[in-house]
Image (cartoon, rainbow, N blue to C red; front, side, top):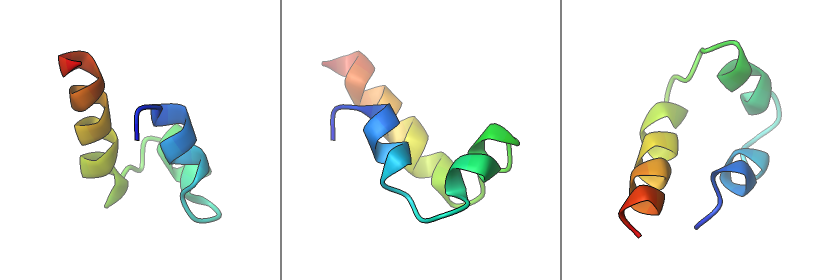
Amino acid sequence: MNDTGLLVFMLEDGSQKDIIDENLGIYKGAIFENIKMKIQK
């Protein structure tokens, strides 16, 4: 996936609010991995 916004949109209900509230939990790895790959491209 090349779009971090689309990745976040596809997460389960309530996940976006958790991310905004800085409660990344299990999503932290997926989000940072996605950002890292985008930077490396």
